[in-house]
Length: 83
Image (cartoon, rainbow, N blue to C red; front, side, top):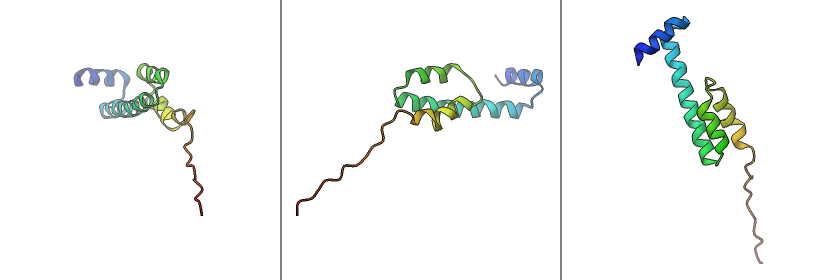
């Protein structure tokens, strides 16, 4: 596997350590975003995140923006005490 990545790295002219770092970066953000999408029952976002590779841009947008849209804000009801 590393030999295959090394060949791709050489073809693209990118140092191997940068390519591996980008792969790990994408994987971590993708897993976090997919976990949040599954938790929020967002099947469309889950599928999009699984298919599209954007070097972490789409997962970051989902985590910090779109995952919070549509959530109802939880409010506490204050009960009136009898005096």
